[in-house]
Length: 147
Image 1 (cartoon, rainbow, N blue to C red):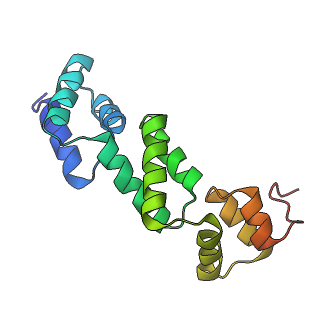
Image 2 (cartoon, rainbow, N blue to C red):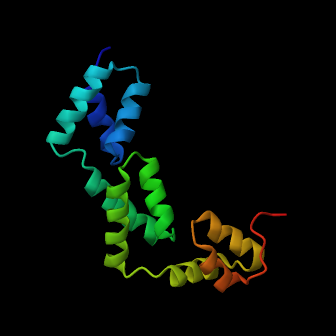
């Protein structure tokens, strides 16, 4: 290969921050050997280019600002390869920072999208809001399963 895994990692990080696990998957998909990937990951971590805590906090703030539920933000971080404890801590810290209120966030989303009833309930469910929040805003007789 013409470039090292480290060079590829730096290029991948130029466009957007990534979790360590996500960066590892990207390098692996490009065919770099496992030992070279591990060395590159250690180097970018040591240089501060990759930091799962910082990445998680920024991603959590953005997710909450975009109308995602606290649980959905945490689930997405874990899907990015962030350890569960780090994802949970970042989501909770972001929620505390912005004064997150699930009911108010869901209400604002419904208003912004002009959704009510079943469509509103399904939209909120897709965003990870609890059944309790959905029932309060969309009514108790909404069938989210579509049956």
